[in-house]
Image (cartoon, rainbow, N blue to C red; front, side):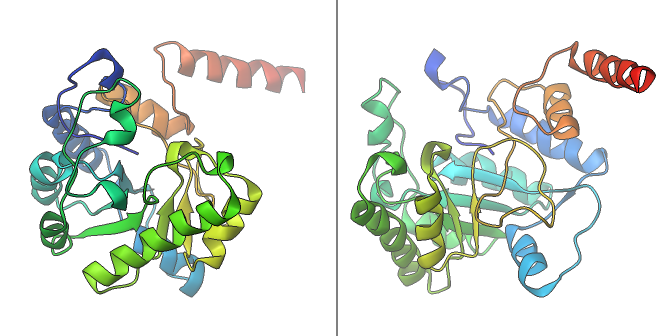
Length: 250
């Protein structure tokens, strides 16, 4: 899970803004290290049609729909022939990230529909991320339903194709929010919970690994190895020592 693919403009953005040269290194190392970048549609087909998924599969997702996804991420993804899914906050497209600037973040341009149309021709899928990026558990059910269903309809009407994928803003959702996503007609939804996805995972609460904007390759590789959002130099040693001593005890 990425957000902005650009240099951070403030300390607050460091976690969310991955510089293009680092994103390029991530994508290059994924290919070199034997990972298989696949589309979210293949996961959908796996759940619904039994499609085969290659070993070491990973999916690249980008949340919110920042303009730098077009300017910086798209050329890199095309260079490495890697598909991706971008989750759009539809109410801010063609404008700026007002839900973030209210919290002190720098102003950033969002994608416009012309850019989105072009990206859709280059192995980029689009999912919904609500209209206004609210904390879904904190608003009433009617408002949640509108945020979910109208963002879906907007994408489908504009792109002329079904929008089957959703991502929960801030990763926050209740059991009822999950059911509202289901009733709206989405077949997959992504959370921000870390961990691996298996065939037994609820397709409407898929786990993702958050990539911080200053993660070097070794941290990203460690996150993918252990299915977690945080990485450290000493974690692997602690992990394997713990397993070793547990075996001795058992």
